[in-house]
Length: 207
Ligand SMILES: CC(C)(COP(=O)(O)OP(=O)(O)OC[C@H]1O[C@@H](n2cnc3c(N)ncnc32)[C@H](O)[C@@H]1OP(=O)(O)O)[C@@H](O)C(=O)NCCC(=O)NCCS
Image (cartoon, rainbow, N blue to C red; front, side, top):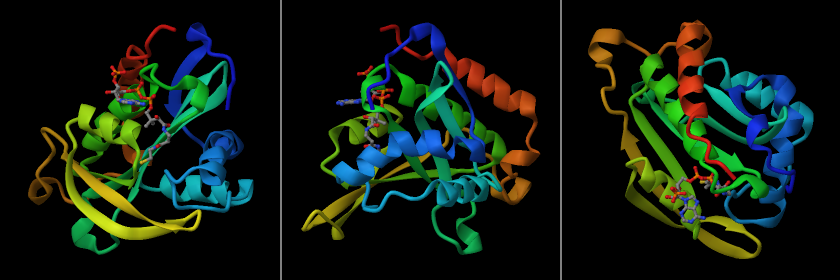
């Protein structure tokens, strides 16, 4: 954490497996020191490269950067494996501690949701280990509403903890009966991805 903020050096793009180290630099402090994730062992770079590769087979994985250094990321992943759930995704979003409240998660989510909609996904879920006021507020800001509490479902730092599930149905989502399964991220028009990223960049807030 703690890289200097440079308004002119901000960017947002699709991730590649080569971003594994940068993503882990952001993610590792949350694994080691907090209960916002129930992961307690930081994955290796090789494990994370494999994870990014796996996610990008179908879903978008975005990073935001400051002078080319990864300072935040957001991705969608499988929510349940049965084929009837193919239009659902679970979300993840993490910002470096020095880059919060600058609209960067908003930019990541705005681009991510636009891309997910183009792909044909319908239902977005956030599974939030609580308390996590920032994450609950971010999701409410995007129109998510709380749909379930799983009590005492995750164990970290010697205590059982709850998760809150939040849900949002993408507005204008396609009709699966007409369009079939969602299109893989690698098969959608790159211009559509670039447009979504360009629109999102405008949401970064000045320091
Ligand atoms: C949650 C998180 C990703 C938000 O990222 P961010 O870039 O700071 O969020 P944004 O600046 O885009 O904020 C968008 C809105 O979310 C809400 N919000 C974000 N952080 C908040 C906070 N600490 N307290 C209250 N509301 C908050 C506000 O409504 C905010 O809009 P505003 O700034 O105009 O008031 C960030 O706090 C983070 O990385 N937290 C640790 C990791 C984590 O908990 N990830 C989610 C796991 S479920």
